Image (cartoon, rainbow over all chains, first blue to last red; front, side, top):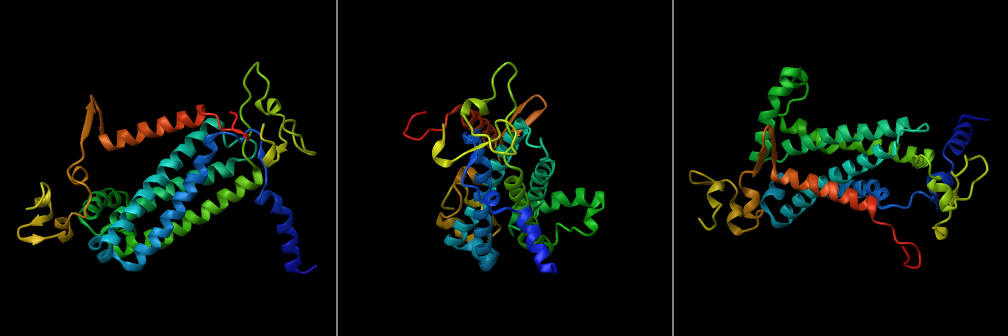
Length: 226
Length: 74
């Protein structure tokens, strides 16, 4: 078996097709709170799309033309929506204990996305090329300089901040989002906490146990929602 | 000076945001300084408070509202 075949076998075992693109979900995935994650992803796609348009035309365009203003606003409100839904997703997974049952890396990757996104948003604010951006950069430089980060992260250097904002950090966020989604697919959605003295909501829902799964961890098909 | 806020876009005789006079900038209430609310040592902008309250409201609604089942039954 050559290297390619070994890699093929390894990937097929580690990333089964039916887990990556499942046609069914556990019975407890039947609440609006499970939509916050995908709403965050949708906002991110809109962010990247509008960001590409803004980068293509440049600051002069987004500050001085009607269409430029529109795309600038779309990019801004996409960022608001991204953080809005990301925090709601964070609350949901926190109260669900989303790190349980071997999902620690999934949780940690989500936390990392949040932190890198904050930095991405910050570099976006200082890249606006207006008085607001200058004000934020001048306020931030003292903190960064006093901590030593200012030596290689100069918020007054537009080109450096712009490079971080349109390439380095978005690629980082997108990569970790990819890892996060992959882990969610492979590990599945965490089971809800069981309430003391009450039967498991999974058992009540009538999920079919699958071979090799814990009781109540079975899946139901799309058309079988209870 | 065409609008109440137009002076904000001028430094001396230099029009630093020329399209502002054409009415394509954000509405007036978004161009002024942020409105802040204070209760003791807690200081928060009205905009941030509205967003936080909206998030809490949507979170509660998402938890409480049932997802409609197939056939329209809930």
